[in-house]
Each structure stands twice: as structure tokens, then as C-alpha cells.
Length: 603
Image (tube, rainbow, N blue to C red):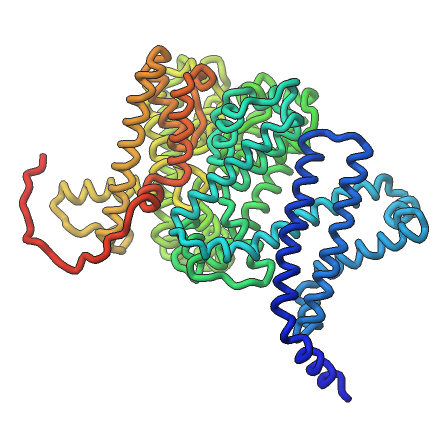
């Protein structure tokens, strides 16, 4: 009997039990993942005793017995086991390493990694193995999440409703994590309301804070904030999609449509490949930014004050690229240790700019084929949406920098060198539209410049980015529409392309809904917190709605009602007014009819 015929008989014998057995392991995988995840959370947030820590790590190692059995079962029930192993070679190697190390430890009463470390003169290699075990487990949980995401997508929710639900879930999880004792330096944990506010601010990549991030939260708290920023900036659904791709599962049409809407991809087909590019491009830029920051901290006057330069570099790189504005310095980039560190300012500004122009734009600009074509013609090699986002962003940066340079000469720029004035003007212009980092004290900035900042914040970043605002494309379409209306031209053409009426209606809807949201918020705040000054209230509201995070210093002084209004502004600004409108509205059943046209006097 040949091997193939023997394997075929086994497949036939196992066929009837295949579905039930695999479903049983799927359920067990969820249960195991949830159980060990709870153990990790307990260990991370409650600081158990050493004996408890040892039991937790033992339970984590024990959970891999289940994953090994599951992997072996998948091989047995797979029709082509060799192909399955080839496709999951990384998982196979990692599990083999865990099995070998466990057997060696059991037989020799010594960790194999400790033995290898002593031979190679590498200390604490077993400790790195412990970290590796935990990291690998999180990857397994992510893969299980990816496998489950198509089932979650199957719930009767529209893509906007599902996106909103994912943010709400992430905010609630973040709130619970921030309330754990190990997250803050205080004996009493942070209140649920303050944790909720901070979680919304981090998830919606805003940066408005009630408590000083640098001194109130421990490094564990900073890690939670960093994860919320990363998940909120790229959207948790993008991560679920990425793990779906890694787990060799296909994407459904509804799943693709959610990514399509969230990432501003040109088509459903491109959205499947774009999510990988988003993740790896973001990771690449954040790593490069972190490396540059790490080697430039030493040039800062107060570099000796840094507790952990590597962590500071990673945190600020992620915060900057995701346009979050969170900083581990009490006064942000305006801290005495960083005031004259212009290299740091430039690196942060570049990260903020790339995070704000949108992933599709970054992907196209750095596309190898496009770079080769650009040698002949830059204009033709870029898509219209990319040109609008990129050139509008450059114009707004230049406009904001010039206005800041001239309006703040006798104020916040007073006493700075020419280089300092130019870098500060450029930095604040870039940061004001999306990020919320500050190298000057905003409570001392003049009203004319605050008005310019409000304008820049309201426009915000580009579509498909981590920033907020009405977006650069919306602003450009409205300007072009207004100019063509004045000229009496009914057709709107940009870059040899015609703009459809549907896009114009969407742009004006976003603008109108945003204006209404901001106006209502300002009105409520003027009643609840009118004593703080109307200019400060307007600035705070637009900053929250556009997920910028700049403030004149009134955030901690807001009343309970005022903080609720700001939280709603941050949430609505992150998901988008049009997305919220689509989520709560009912779709028209039919519009296959037409009434007689009416004439209404306007203006």
C-alpha cells in the first residue's frame, strides 16, 4: 500500500469527525486564550507575590500543551499535512523550540536556554525566553482574534456601526486597564471617570489630559497608553484584518468594505493588500523614528534626566506618528530639557507629518514603481487624491509656519535664535493640524495666532490618516466648489478629473455636521464653564473635535459636564461625523422617482 492511498484512507476515516473535533479545539482555544490573558492582566496590573508569579508563568507554559495538541490535530485532519507545515513554518518552529526546552528542563532540571547562555556567555537568556513566551502568546491571541473577526463581522451591523463598536470596546478595555493599581504612582487607583477620559483621549489619538502623563502614570501605565494609541491610531479592525491574513483566512466582502472605508482605499481589491502595507509601513516608520530619537536624546541638555531613553524613544515615536500628542515630559516638547533640542523637534515634526498625510499617500509616494515613473513625470505618476492630500498639507504647513513666524515675533518667539524661530514655527504649524505637541506655552500665545490655529485644527489631517478634522480633501473640494460657483461653472474639475456631485455632497455634509457639532459643544461649554473664557473654550473644543490635543491649559479645570462634552467631541471627531450619521440613520429604501424641480432664493 502506497503512502498516498494510506493517507487517503485516514482522511476518509477522519472525515465525519473532522468538523466537530476542530470546532471543539476552536472553542478550547478561545477559552484558553481568555484564561491566560486574564492571568497576564492580573500579573501586569496587580503586582502579585513571587510565588503567584511563578504559578502564572507555569500556567502560561501549560497552555502551550493545548496549542501543541491543537497544531498536531490540525496536521492529522489536514488533507495535505506537509503543505500545512510549510505554510505555518514559523508556528511549527516556535512550538518545537518550546517542546525541546520543556523536555530538557524536565530531564536535566536546567533550562536549555540557560545552558546555551552560559556557554555563549549570554546572561539572563532564560529571562528573555520568559518575555518571548508571553509575546508569542499574544501573537497567538491575535491570530485567534483574526480568525474570529469574520464571525464578528457577520453580526448584523453596518460597517460604520461595527467601526464605532470597535472603538467603544477598546475605550472600555483601556479604562479598565488604567484603573489597575500598578498603572499609577498613587496609593489609590485613578477614578473611573478620569480613566475613561484618558482612555478616550489615547484611543482617539487626541492627547488632552486631566493628569500629567509623565508623573501620574507608571511605566506600566505608559505602556497601556502606548498600546491604546497604536490600536486607536491604526484602528483595531485593521489589526484584526492583519491577523486574519496571517492566519491564512480569506476576507469577506463586508470585512473588506470596512477596511475600504477606514483606510480610504480606492477599491475593495486594493483594501486587502493595503492593510499589510499600513501595518508594516507604520512599524517601519515608527522604528526609524525611535532610532533617530534614541541617538538624539544625548544631545539634549537634560538627557541625564531620562529614566529609560529607549522607552522614551519608542513612546514618542508611536505618539508622534499616530498624531496622539502624548508626551512623557511634564511640559511636552516645551520642557526645559527639550526647548533647544531642535533635532528632536524636527524628528517629531516629520513623524507627525507622515502620520497626518494618510497611509494611501505614504504608500504611493514611496512605491518603487512610482519612483521610477516619477523620473519622467511626477504629476502624472501621482493619483489625484494623493496630490490633493500632499499639496494641500504642504500649503497649510507653509501658511501656518509663516503666520506663526510673523505674528509671534514679539511674543512666544522672543529671545530665540533664527534657527529656533524657524524650527518652532514649522513645528507648531505641523503639530497644530493633527498632533498636539507643543514647543511653546499656548497659554501665552496671542489671540490672532490662536484663531489661525483653530482654522488649521478644524481642517486637520488627510483621509486615511491617524489625524482628525474635516480633512484636507474636504477643504479642497469646498474651496474649488465655491470658486466654480462664483465663476458660474457647474462642472468642477481638478487635475484633468471631474468631481462627481456625490463627492461634493459628502464634503459639504462633513463640513456642515462638523460645524454643527462644534457649535453645539461650544454652546454647552459656555454655559457649564463660561468662567474659563470663550476663546479658551473655542480652542479646546476644536482641538478635541479635531483630535489635536493642544490646549491653553483649561482641561483639568473643566467641570464634570465640560469634560463629558470634550470626551464626546474627541470620540465623534475620531470616528467622523459622517460615519456617525451613517451608523444611526436608516437607509432610504428607494429613490426611483422625481418630483418637479423647485426654485428657492438663496443669498
